[in-house]
Image 1 (cartoon, helix red, strand yellow):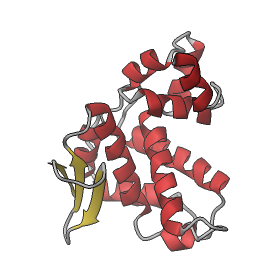
Image 2 (cartoon, helix red, strand yellow):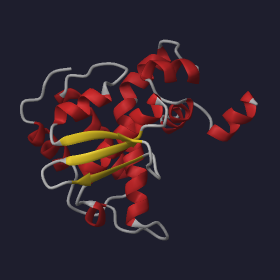
Image 3 (cartoon, one colour):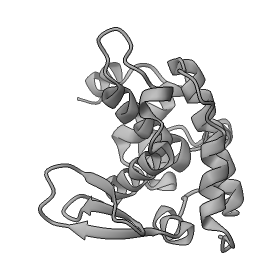
Length: 193
């Protein structure tokens, strides 16, 4: 991974990919795919597994803390001169990796929620943001081109793919569903039981 010389400008460029208007879910997903692709390119990350902890450190102005008493998997807040990204240190390494990606999504989307993700029917802006941050983490840790390449090369089992990308089986299966490569998760877990 290449050291970024201007981390703030990298985040600014990634944020700039988001238009300043309300977005549909489909538009948001397309933009998140572009944002994560650009971020990986900025940091010269070319294959799995994404070194997300090193990436967070390289972006600058982000302090990573592992806390053992969080009520959620993670949280991020601005501390005046840096972002504090807190992870539940009791969770598995693969879960912490996903949480880092999710919290990085919060940093990228900071200040845009109400403009870009207004309430839609009975879904609040906050709920839409959480969904976007999950999608951001999935796209960052399991980029579409890498997933499709691995799958086409015959690596198709959830455990093997999860091991390669260093994510949980559940996160891998959801990503495979998003990419249209497997059936819905309920079918998968019924067939495993």
